[in-house]
Image 1 (cartoon, one colour):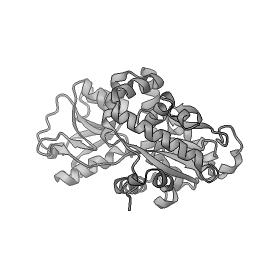
Image 2: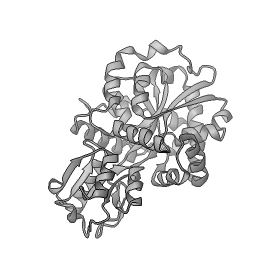
Image 3: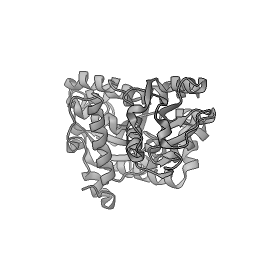
Length: 354
């Protein structure tokens, strides 16, 4: 378990939330390889055999794992091999070179590769992980109102997406973000600093949020809910989508296989929403993490394959944030890396984006 926690979650989230992530560098370096170079490689899928690349993560690859374990891919006539990596930095070179024809990851990843000219399309959202992005106060820190955060030290990795939630919280509550002292720390270091009292709060993601609460910390807010005194309730302070993306060349050559994958993932989405505890048990065994941790993270996510205005707005906002953080040199047009046509064909009621 500890190996998975430190290597998979910590590495993964640092890589795709930080400025200058390895994903961006890999995509930039390997774009010139071209997707056509590996067109005949294993996992091409022209005979119903597919290699799907994902991550050891219940929100990135939850549906991917469930679809395999429950036989939903087989029901569609597909023979699937799931390759689950430790993080997007391992998948990035495979996406950029064209070897990973179908890959699961975050919208941050999608924007990164699109900004570097890699020809891929997001064919469906999978989950909004906004609820996993949170700020936790130390056990001895008394926060009686949002403005009490002014003058406090908050540990956060430079460029982390959770900063979007902090910004929006400040704007919504009249808190001056310029009066908050941010301390650049990785998530694991934030946890230790919070315990020692070197920082007043930490801004991070799961599983570190749960770890901080377990050691006595108090969750103040996340992307979807605020516990701040005087500002309690449901909020919309960040969108952080997980998606499935497909190489342009493969999508054009084998749209029928991509449709089958989407149908299987749709069944898996319904299964997770209807059977969260059973799903946590299945997924936890595959990614080698305890069921309770997996279930907690599952419950914080919103699993849905809907292409709606919230997805479009959240994706565009993430791209603008990445530009602000200098993670990308330009904001790619969303239509250049998002293709809603197959979902519109299969599930027209779930495609409502304007």
